[in-house]
Length: 305
Image 1 (spheres, one colour):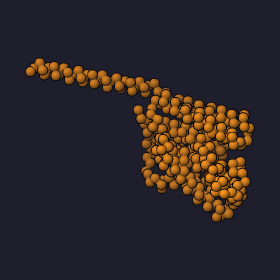
Image 2 (tube, helix red, strand yellow; image 1 turned 90 degrees about the vertical axis):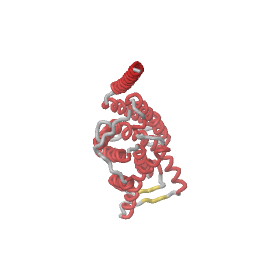
Image 3 (cartoon, rainbow, N blue to C red; image 1 turned 120 degrees about the horizontal axis):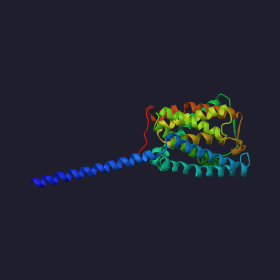
Image 4 (cartoon, rainbow, N blue to C red; image 1 turned 180 degrees about the vertical axis):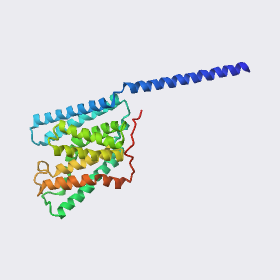
């Protein structure tokens, strides 16, 4: 009897010891993986420098082969090239620099994210419609339409596709996906929103998209709004939706895209007020009304192992 008890005790002790060694090994492996991870600053720097070089390369290709002005084929080539080069950079960075699951960036498949995409689009379209009605009723803008619905739809859809590939997807994946998420692992939401907005504005300067102070301020403000949308919805698709709706609307009425189908008496008023200031001011309020969600702006979001 004593021998059986002794053997049982030894077996239990050996099992416990093995479990402790296993747990210790797993813990050491986890700590080792964490230790191999680059510091937050360097991970963001690597991605930011990489995508900046890509955008400069795309601009160079466009100007070299299609000239400095607008060219429809050049737009197509630039759009495809941008997404084809930028998206893999973020995928590789997430895998090898962060060493964390893709899900942490909050960009699921479109099958799961289409509602958030439409939500983001609505946060722009609803206040932009209010702005459009306002400037038309007040007589600040007159729009002459010389086209049909059948001609507008394919033109609009093709522009949306180009905006999605050239701007909405790659920019949101980098700044409201990768950079915002990594900042939010160490900083509260409000600081992550502000940090990615600063980096977005600086990136705009680096690639030549913000040659003037007012343009820098515009990019910073736009990034703040997109960052707040990201923080509230916790979904990059919502940011893509807002970005897609905004840039498509801004570019659609431009002469180089729609030609003489839309004649606007005051393009600056239409773009700056109806399609710019009003939706930017009301976007977050619109989102808050639609989602009815309380957001803790002081919360950090540690990365998933």
